[in-house]
Image (tube, rainbow, N blue to C red):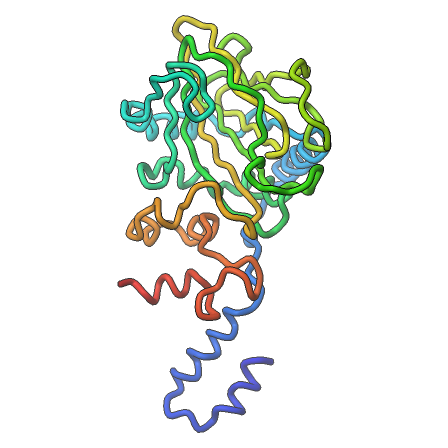
Length: 305
């Protein structure tokens, strides 16, 4: 309809390609597609996604036990091995960044350092679960690789949406996803969670009971950013507890990490379009997030310099 009306009004334009350009421009101003558009989950995958979303909304967290098969898990581990070896990211003083232990590797801004997580970041099952928790307008907030080593003390309980000054309880603003690269056990510090705490308006009781996210390597843990949680103490002598944390937020809020500055333009330009949009090169709706009334990704591609 828009295209037909525009053609009638600009019949005197010199070049047909000019007309096509402006038609495309107007089309790009419509509501953006859902990030899950084009996904076709199998019935089993859809059931897993629905069950996980239901758990997150009800108790604050959910687990997909066999998210990665052995092949994908091995590929992810191999790709991240050089990243975990970056000694410049090793925390050696207690208390920094909320981790009191002295044997924790904490590596942010992952997309600027490795391509190992690109595929997993747009996994249809993972993205479908995040959409189920946050709704259609969401984006990556921060991507971190973590490795609490032997002797790492437990992390204090905290909420990952605490930097947003919003009265509680509230609809989900942050959906955290954690992919276990090693088995998570009580002994090596499996994540502690306080069930139902995403619905609270009260403060945390220091003696609050927690549950532990014990799971096998390859499992996916998802939780509402309003849930009180923390990493447990690694009481083992030789085990590490590696994970990839991909945290998302509703796209009308500021991302935790400034991915537009952190990831080089050349790296962004070589990524799949879906990943570009997940990282924030997308509009929230027909007004918010565009550039010069254009789809931001279109603008990005047309202004290479």
